[in-house]
Image (cartoon, rainbow, N blue to C red; front, side, top):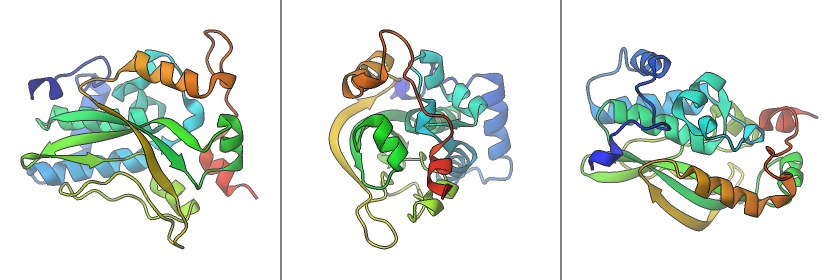
Length: 222
């Protein structure tokens, strides 16, 4: 279990700014593990905007501190940020990766990916009250409201992994392939998987060419 508590280059909760941010989120939260994790979950979910267009292959961009400093990122760094914050208060965490089919995305994003399969979707597992519980802080409240889905809540007891349906009952997301659980970010594995799935985005070793803007802007634009 110790390896799920250690700081790493990705789960870098010893980073000064990240330490200060964690302390600020927990300032008025009771000294109870589940309540503290719930507060951290909401902070990660809603204070860091979800934007898949900012994906880069540089290992530094997968770290918790980078997610915090950038203010917008995608599912994996947001999961790592929650996991790092949890480790900092003595709660073990591990990263989960899976491929998901997203039925409600912007046409611009689907056109960019040339697929409705999102390769290497990230979530975090937290060890609370003697069991591993899944949490997915990827999609911020503003984005969920625009997409007509309820923001994912996390109670520290039950798995919280995806919005299966929209508020109107339409299919939203389904898991299609499980890549496993990791005590640290498998950076090369993720990048190679993304390159294989979306080879049209890459030219040699260069970063993928991404549209400007964000998913929120895509959905809110007329």
